[in-house]
Amino acid sequence: MAFLVGRPLIAIAIAAVVVGVLVLVQTHRQKTPVTHRVQHVALSDEQQMQLGDRDYAQTLRENKANIVSTGPGYAEVQRVAKRIEAVAARDKPNFVWKVTLIRKNVANAYCLPGGKIVVYTGILPLTQNDAGLATVLGHEVSHATAEHSAEKIERAHLTEIAAAIVAGGVAFTPQQYIRVMALLGAGSSLKFSRSQESEADHIGLIYMARAGYDPHQAVLFWKRMLRASKGQEPPEFLSDHPSDAHRVQRIQDWLPEAEREYKPAPATTQS
Ligand SMILES: [Zn+2]
Image 1 (tube, rainbow, N blue to C red):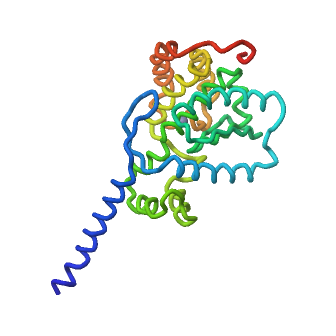
Image 2: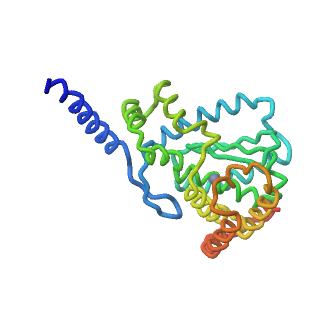
């Protein structure tokens, strides 16, 4: 009897040790760009790109008829993204950056793990100019360079997922991929924590300044967003924040740091 009673406990103990070791082996310690926060991330750059790329491919398939590939909106998104991506690539050289503009009347944009960006045309009336768009792209790209999605997995301490990641090595099998995606939710509908949102504001502000966009324009953009979003479903970058006014205040607090990083770009690109 003692054997029968003891066996499950031993099995649990062994499983706990094995999973614990796997998590230790796989998680790597690193610092976020700009804010230099120490974080522990369980996914490699390649795994993050794999997750993001699949989600991106699916989004492009589903919106095939609405992908914008000509015109002033398209040109602006490509122009601004190129400069923001060049800055972000200094922090994440492995990621492959790409942006797609989709015709849809929602004021939103997002960047998937690994560097694939989606912008909806509905945000362009609010961004108004290149610096406004740079504010949005800077924020979204920061979620990717700060590896906020990957960090979520580690934070959740889901040992099953960790074990699946280890078992899969660099690449996920389709089954592991489904399990990881189920945990994350669809990449495009990720919910970040408040502190991650605030961090993306901070990093994004520095990124836009480094890309040659006047960081003061960020404050004007956020005020426009707040006015426009009153009474509506908040887009990703307005979600789950302490308070709207507080957000603008914090961005203003980071302005001196952003000003030090700001070098105006040559004319013709900023309107
Ligand atoms: Zn965000």
